[in-house]
View 1: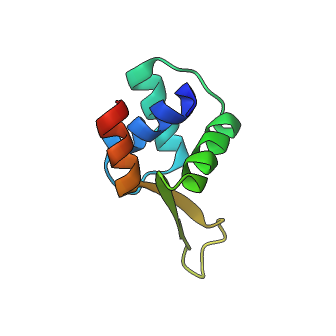
View 2 (view 1 turned 120 degrees about the horizontal axis):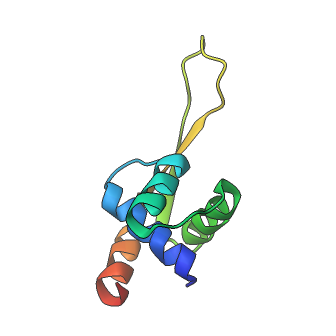
Length: 87
């Protein structure tokens, strides 16, 4: 696992719940003093989903809102175990 993937996993874990990529980015900047583009963060989050360390949930907005659906990330049990033994 890359170092970016590890800190992204840790950040989602620290935020403890449904967190979006922007919140995760802010946590990386705050806790780890990392400056990273959202594009690179999305790539890391997608890799973590493929490895089953994270799951993603898409939330639709109401019919009156014209915003795109928002994606949130949650750590899985496999992700928690990885952090427990490798963190």
